[in-house]
Structure formats: C-alpha cells, structure tokens
Image (cartoon, helix red, strand yellow):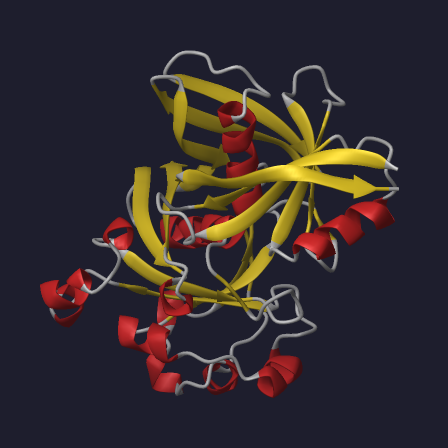
Length: 319
C-alpha cells in the first residue's frame, strides 16, 4: 500500500464551488495507467491530472490528463488548474510577478504564463500546442438544430455556419443568434447519435455574442448573473455526451477552438480578445479569457486564461 497526495481546485473562476472542478495528483510515479484511470473515477470530476517529473529537461513537469473514461491529449481547464496548483502549493517556487511553466502533455509542450500578486498566483494563461484546424462535416442546419432541441432559425449560417475546430481536441462550434437560444439548448442524445457521434468534431459548443444586440445588453439581465461573469462578450455552453456529465461548466480546449474560429472570421490582424461566460445554466458559472493573434490573415497563436481557487487537499491510499 502507498499514499499519494492530491489538491482539488475550481478553475476559470474566482469563487469556490463555481467554475470547473479539478483534482491534481502527486506521487503517482510507477502506477499503471489502469490505476490512474481508477483514481480518476474515484474523484469523478470532469478531469483529473497526474503530475510527474519532466521527461524533457526544458519542461517544468510532465502532466497526464484523464476523464473518468479515458486519457486526453490536451484539455484547457486541467492545464490552467495544474499550473496554478503547482505554484500555489510551492511545488514550483513562485518567482516575480509573472512566470512561465511548460507542461509536457500528450499533445506536446504547453506553455502556461502565471501572473502573481505578492507571490500568490491570480491568473494563468496557456498557449495551445496546436494551431486551429477546421473541418466542415455537417452542413444540415435542421439536423444540427435537432441535436440541440432548437430550430434551424436559431443557428447562424453563412461565414459563421457550424464548423468542426480543433486545437488538440475537436469540437463542433455552432453560433446561435441569441443568448436566449443558448439558454434554451438541450442535448437530444438520439439526434446526437445520428448526426455527430461518429464525426471528427462530435462534441457541440454553442455560443452567442452577448453584448452586440440591444436586448442582450440589458443591464437588468446582466445584474442577475454572478458578479464574476458579468459583462462578458460571449455566452457559451459545451455538451460532452459520452463523458462523465452531458455538459461541461468550463472548457478551455473548446474555448481555444472558439478563439480560432472567431479570429479566422475577423477581418483585421493583431491581437483579438474575448471574455466568455460558460456554465451559467449549470449553476457553475465560469469566466474564460480567450485570444488569438493574427499576422497577414494567418493565426499564429491561440491562448486561453482564467483564475483558479484552491478547494481541498488530502491523501489517498492505493496499491
């Protein structure tokens, strides 16, 4: 019998018991993958990370990311949360007002810039190891609307038609006409089985610009939101059927895809930024900072960032 140590946190939030839960595990060296998977199922969070010594001396740590069902090559909230935990716990000593950790993940090295105040991490921002890749697989708006229990008139077409996008993990990015449509969306699992299940980008991400129309700028409506997600540019939801839960409260990998999707459709170059509120409908409101940089109409960087708060720590006995 041996003992491993863990720290849990809530990611993409400044408020405990909101955002996306994460368990970060230390001391699991030598344990087989099946045991890592079993530990992940024991936590039963959307993801759990296992931190190891770096395999490459230029990296800060080696990190493996698991859902209760499988190991992932990359995921945003586990990367952001793990970087925060490493610095907040002293596993990686805090240095200055800003420091960069390089986490070796299955997708490749992922740099994470951590901002500190008085030696305490307050924000972390990752740069994706892969630039956005797009594939159009499903063009039937009626079929996609049925997946979301919406009508085709709720979906945006033209240049903003639904598109599969990946920055390491693929999502079906679906623009909706209003925040109200985002709130009304309900996953139709039978329709998802028929339309998206076997596609490259099977998990749907729906979003709407939340500050563009007069109706969606209603101050009274914004005041109903928790303070840490007020004033965002975008309202989003991410459905992950076949995973631990049918919906995810804060999805860094999907929001990286969204940054690439929006940047490609923005006519200007330079640094493009958006603030995204996700998880509101689940009671786990989260705030994600996303950005993409374009030069000569080519996207050359995608970044996702946010805050993290520590929740608990403890030990677990394993064989």
